[in-house]
Image (cartoon, rainbow, N blue to C red; front, side, top):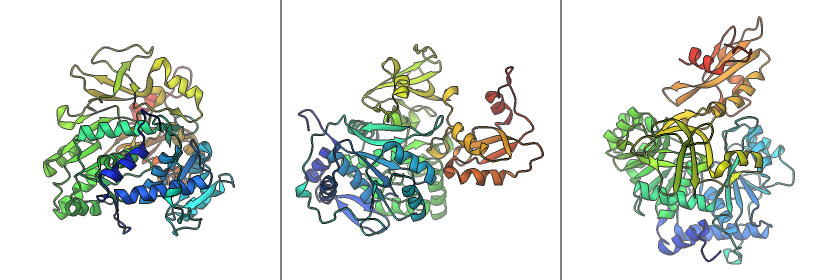
Length: 504
């Protein structure tokens, strides 16, 4: 470590000193509670074992699995070694998951046994020399990682806070997803903003209900750890269980994407459980859901704007400050709204959200052309549109036309990858995919299709067809068949007209 460096592993060492006997992590599925001291010991053991297998600074480590203590330990061991974690979304198809691994080229992959057929298909599609290990010792078909290795044998390398730490693949805007490389410093700065903005203390308790492969799940879990809070972990979202946990464990904060919070409130209405301990929720949701939460719990909802590439955050604030806004730019960021010529727009006008500062990611993995375009003129160009009011609140205004994006339940889906899967059906000749309002997911996916002459196809058949080729959350919820798509004067499909005519 350099004289002026402070890394994620330093947080683990610090917390073992300050909060040694305090609980750090508790799994809801029966694996017990681990305190901060025990967590450091386990991280050191795994770092030592990985080091003995040849893991060095900059090497990639893949993870295929549900939330568990060991998932967080992999992150901790990688931080200690200066390695880079490549967590893979288990909701992807095996083909999509294999693409992410082959893109990042990890030498080690830790996998759980929750879906052995899927994991087997992924393993068959990556190079044979990639070493697979059980994520949880003794609970899978692979080797365990040196459980007898003593952490005392770990030799910490020189690691900088600016070193790459995690590659998270974003949605495929054109052909394939791009791996966004985030540094240890990105995480640490996010922790500071989250802890300060939500007024967190070591007495708070975090519900870790988002997957650790997601930027929000990872950053919230490590923010809680950094502050000295207890993380109560769930392998997957379960609203009835969450309502009981809030009452019994006094859970005080969490992150939510639609429809999570609505499901929790609906369950609370049935059980009449006490959810007043849940004093803070951050995320994205509809105004009626947010206001219902605040009324029932007396807590505060924190609105925000961000993306993987901005280390989760660019702006945040309490919902009540300016209902409907995404809060104000965070303290360690500069935000500008730019026109198509990259010139700042006037207050109140819509422009592309651009950002620079310590929260901006290091770039797309091995995508130098994309990086030059994204980072042009010294700013990260998000592709999102917004406007800033006179009080400095940011109002999200959608996606740029050339970077159209659909966000069902907090996931990112680009129309191009769905359209590619739809067009793989032999009876579909043309398709336009776009986002539509959805009562459950906030934004749903609709496909407007032209079939081959004489073809007959039911919407449910096409939806099932697409769901077998890409992640299920990317398949359309709505399908409409039409005789022809609106066209421009040059004969190309008029996407905007399609959305105007069929977007209801």
